[in-house]
Length: 182
Image (cartoon, rainbow, N blue to C red):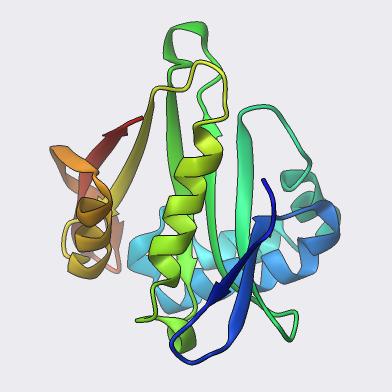
């Protein structure tokens, strides 16, 4: 995937590209930020992630180039990572036609300018280059209307709702399962 320059309404320029092991520190920072700011949106827990990811080499390993998986980052002109979205293709033979969109996050200070759309569009563009990949699957908390609306505008459709998919602070959260056929 070639780097894409993206102009926001704020006139700040961003580049969307695959993250590499050298981006591990920035990735760790934004991933932990996403878990702190929106614990309801991710199955991962910030406490577990902080403990697991004290060793930066683990983050770097997650960013190693591997067939059927990648993580994209939206990088501002000042070099700060402001958004992420990843995809992983299932590795079992019978499931290799499916991939999962994961880790989608855009920093609040740049929301509302189309960055989420650009990240997901870039994931889809990159996914189309993966052999045998026919569909992208994702889960979104049912009450996250902004994210659901974005995914629907892009073409994802809901095919199921999982009640009590997560439990956060004694409160259950339902998730919607969505799919996009490539």
